[in-house]
Image (cartoon, rainbow, N blue to C red):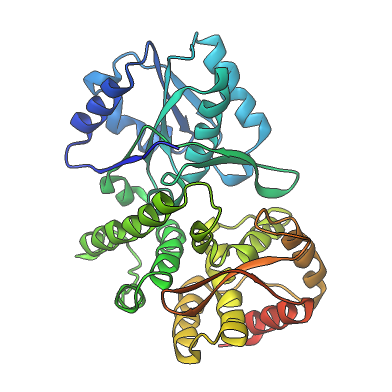
Length: 355
């Protein structure tokens, strides 16, 4: 997989124009959802490089990360005359960059795409690293391919359009990156106070600095293991439980991805204490931060069989065993760990009742 160019924008118009020129496309299209069409498209639509670029729109929200939305994008590309030499510009959050990347990767066996993530979650996670896909059969990201965007352009001005919940959703992935990186990075993240208004004094600058550090962690790991054969599984910390929480929520009341990951971190840090010796004090500090900022998804013992069943469908599993990424300490990554049904249920007990 070719190396991905990630740019922190200083001048979005100039950087987008340069990225488009590198693709040498015969036609270009921009994909938005109903939210980014209103809040983000106005930022770029009058750029010279975007002159007369057709707009393809899909409904917003992870519940629309579906085969139906994907088919709509394919149909629009076909109807608008896209060729295998065309370019798709994905302007949106993680749902849109995942789906748009997959649409581009499969249309006429693959056209070029550029990601302009507009949420913190997409900037720190979904748009970087080459994972594309859709939800299918009630499971998260069940269908997809590894393929890099030609360029990812991160412009933090878009973060000012987000509410506190969407900032927190992205911040959960940043917290994960701190846990797999260094104690200093982890402590910086835990010491950040989350204001009610994300454009509060100084918060945006602090968040931007931490974002750059977080993206660097992901880039380093992805470059070492692009298709998740080994160390890239470090990025799955919190996600075995997290995807199960998220899939269960899809059946009830959908939750933001980062909230599910945060709750997954609680369970997997508990397993890390029990199975790989993660320090109890660091687990409790992290769990306290998560519960104070993310609350808890209400579950009961009756939900355990459903959550276990959802975990059995996780793509990381091998030989029929549920696979986890755990930690021996901050930055001490233990991939390919397994747990018994009893241990998983104990972790869920801790999530429901622990502090």
